[in-house]
Image (cartoon, rainbow, N blue to C red):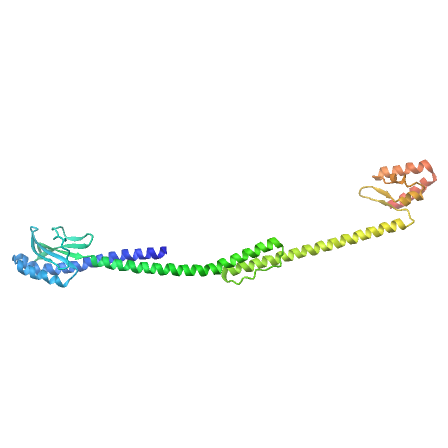
Length: 314
């Protein structure tokens, strides 16, 4: 819309300047011709002939007034067009040149005879026709503006449907995915251009998220299966250890802890209430405590313990 207004304004200014320049050119040529034809009448003081020559301007409807002046600035002969406004006064003598007012152009030119200035001629040109032309141009520009606004409205409606509607549908799909946490949903929106590229990128992102979520689910399922298998293995080991008639002990070389099973304590003759103290939290203190317990009861077992300890250390 702004472009149409600026273009119309520029065209009007250009047309105005062109019309003014053309009118000045045309009026200058006409004034020079009349000056050459009336120079003799002005030189010989023949006002009747000068008036008859000026009456020839009746064929020029745009010329409102023509005045012939002598060197003293007095009006020697004049012509007023029948279409001239009654309020339009004869122009006072001025220097050579073109003068514009609201509705007319007045041109002053010198009248020469043998290269000697003997008077002046003034022509008043009607600019009302040009103003009417400008008004017609303004009507055409306004009509073009209305057509362009209507065409822009139709184009914007179509553009809104091709861009705005897919974006609204895409936002609805995103809200649904966020609420349901279902990444298998895809945006089935038919669109082209940048909007279609956006929809394709959105679907590709959903595919990647779905793949990663499935991988996480598979990894979690595998971990749960491994934990379940480990728990079953530990339970089977515990059942086997309780059902076996062997005394079991375990030595953690990292922490130095030594664990002795309840059966181990029974085999050494300790009641169940006393074998808990066989779980020592350190190698040195655990071995020393064990030695002290054994030494207090039976010296012969000490030598056997040393042999077993050396074998475990190897």
